[in-house]
Structure formats: structure tokens, C-alpha cells
Image 1 (cartoon, rainbow, N blue to C red):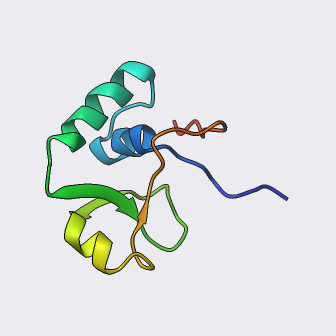
Image 2 (image 1 turned 120 degrees about the vertical axis):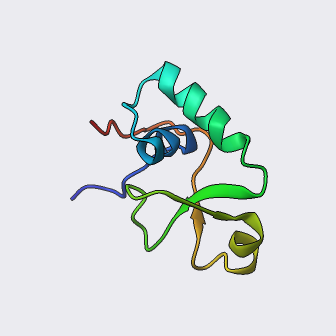
Image 3 (image 1 turned 90 degrees about the horizontal axis):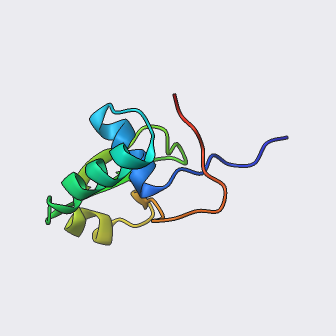
Amino acid sequence: MEGPTTITRAQASCIFYGESIKAENERECERRLDDLVELDICYLDNDPTEPFVVAKIKIQEFPHRYKLYSRTTSSSLHVP
């Protein structure tokens, strides 16, 4: 049985912007997300393969609903 899917914030940013997951795209897409100062990327219901952005205040108000991605991971997922 496989463990849960682990996707970093940089990988999720590539998925969100429709870019392939590679180091150069990860840096650029995450930078674009960082420029959205009032928003952050998150996911629902233990499905990190479908990232979306939402207001940071909403994430803080409903942490049980909105899950944040970690910045780094030791076991990352390659999503084509």
C-alpha cells in the first residue's frame, strides 16, 4: 500500500500554472505565487494534486479545510 502523495509548494505552483515540474519552472512559478501577497496556494480533502489559490485570511480562519503545501520534502512526487 502506497503512502500519501507528497507535493511541495513549488511543485504545486507548477501544477497550478500548467507548467512541467522541473527546477527552473518550480523557481519561476513559486516566485509568481509569492508575488500574490494576499493569496496562498492550498488544497482540499487530502488531494494535493489539485492546487488552487485562496486568501491567506481564509486559510487562517479555516485551517481544517484549507491545507498548505510544505516548502520542501525528502520524497517528492513527479507529476507529468
